[in-house]
Length: 246
Image 1 (cartoon, one colour):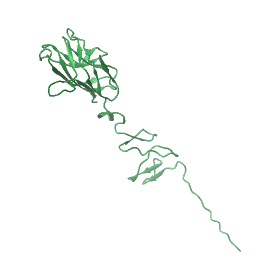
Image 2 (cartoon, rainbow, N blue to C red):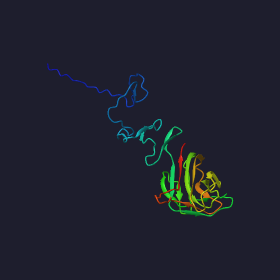
Image 3 (cartoon, helix red, strand yellow):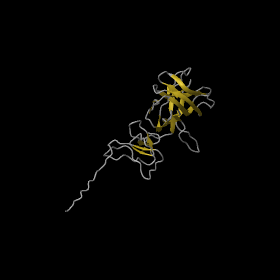
Image 4 (tube, rainbow, N blue to C red):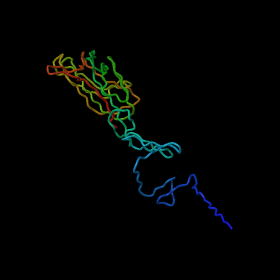
């Protein structure tokens, strides 16, 4: 009698949503490793059951997008197109807003008795940096906004020619309130028609709801100089800047 042996093969598949544990009998996720994990090659995140995830770019870091969402690769500051200084605010990295502008031509202003209303500084239109595009400067005026409430460092270096014994003022003006928010003044000790440099370095709170401007005033007519001069050479001398600190 001829006998035939039938081999029955069973394929045992785990349930579609089974959880696998390594070093644990109670896995909490699809794959739960209770111990160290070594990845010798690239790590891909995102994607789906039919599409590969991303391995990111050199220099990027992995950022959580919260429960139920895949993390994503991002630059350290999260703003790859911005130029500026990286600062930490409320536990988050960001590129600080910065505005640095130089004058491109002299500007003459009319004196004002009491010097209570300041004139916008014109010709502040050589933008060295304006990384959030919130500054505007023309031959007659200038204005800017800050993108977030915070503390900002102010630097102004302005060369002035005016009458001896007067007291020019330079600073930042709040266009909404019509008042100074930072300023410096000093007696003009140079001979009439000479040159004297005024410098303002300070840090002040500024609000995104307001519009600001760089301004100057004097009781007598005055000229703001854009460039130094002399037999040994010349170069840009009047420059203003604002940069967020926190």
